[in-house]
Length: 279
Image (cartoon, rainbow, N blue to C red; front, side, top):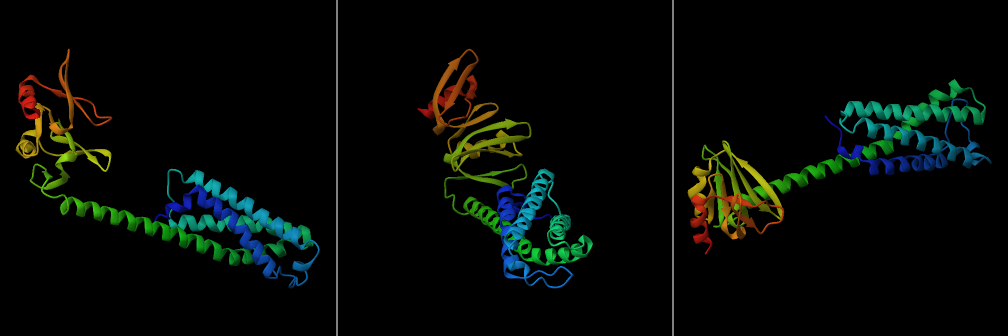
């Protein structure tokens, strides 16, 4: 399974990178860490404790930020699987623990390889909480988005099949299956495209072109019932959308009152009939 998209979000990764060292700071202040050579009961209260804890938090911030930046670059065109992301997180924590162990070894003068395994165990134990919370948050957001998309789709389907009213046109394909239901006053024009017709209509202020496998001849009677009439052998136009009819060297054209929609050609064969219906 692919991991949630939120994991790749740059803003959320920045928040995670800042939150993780803050959590580690709180953990280090509240609890006394153990590094193999006994419990350092006096270390959190020593003179240099604040500085050393701050340095380790900075190490975690830098390593995590670099890791998340690489993750963002690596996954711009590919989503990781859950297993791949788990390995990435493990490597991220491991690198941070290696550098923190190096600092502890130098600061407290302990052998590096005696500190390293304990630092890794503590690092993994501490990382479980913030990484789990971040993962659950990402999953929750992904689930909520899927539910919202599904509800939107359901509402659109319901509005298309139940609430369009008597002015709704049911466009069917060549087999008679209803493929599009749209209010007649939203249809702008229909264009022939081989074995398909392209229906241009207004959907909540946005222009939508729907390709339907059928012919203009098959839907002509249906369209005429709603004053969407043939103006050319390859075009139908909604007469209520026509702003003016103009003539130039290439012939007649219907200029529509919709911004961004090109004029529709009018052939001489259908010009007089179209003008009569407009009048």
